[in-house]
Image: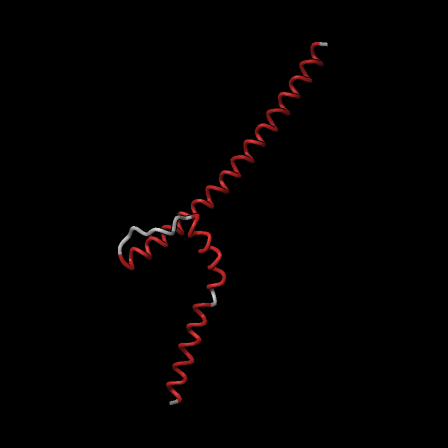
Length: 100
C-alpha cells in the first residue's frame, strides 16, 4: 500500500513539473496560432502534427529576426542620411569661406 501511494505521489509531482512551464508558453502559443498560420495542418498523423508545430515555431522565430533586422536597417539608413547631410553642410560652408 505504501509503495502504491509513493508511486502515485511521484507521478503527481512529475505531472506538476511538466505543467509548471505551461503558463510561460501559453501566450507565445496563443500568438503563433493566428499569426503563424498554425490553424490548418496539411501533414498526416502525429508526426505531422509535431512537425507542423515545429515549423510554425521556426517561422515565428524567423519573423522576429526579420523584424529586428528591418529595424536595424532603418536605423542604419537614418544614420547614413544624417552623416551625409552633415558632410554636405560642412562642404558648402567651406566653399563659401574659400570663395569670399
